[in-house]
Image 1 (tube, one colour):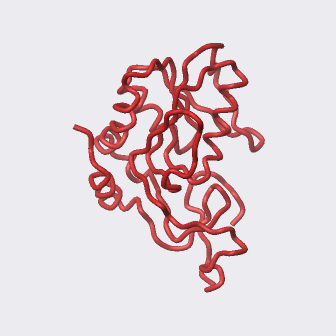
Image 2: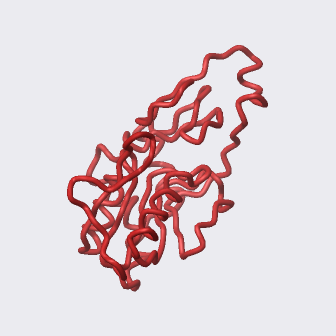
Length: 194
């Protein structure tokens, strides 16, 4: 049986993965909430549960390989691929762009599922989709743990998230938390200027 939205939220709360404060998101936007998925993904049993929603959704799709952006998407992609019994690879940053390295490749016509941890604007996922297209792969879907846009980001293929929330985010120049003088924090893996 797949976990419900409430089950997933309970896991995030139990693992203290839902942070409150003043955060700089990878997208460059600011928010009063941050999903530190690594705090959930450090527990294999929770990882299996939250990724089950993604793998169940795509279980009838023809998929050859799962591709994820590093860092956040690697464990999600690996676990979804494990549950689907598919190959898992990842793209990583090189000179500020995502690229396939380590001998990873996508063959023309290969059917690809992209997996990520958190989507706010979808920037990293769109970068991976471009890698798939340039290699001649066929994008069949996108799966991610947390949809911070509450469905507003559309990748143009079937997509599913384990948790959908409409979390408010602001352009830095419009951020009311900045105006309160509260310092901004960047807790994720990607180094961007705070």
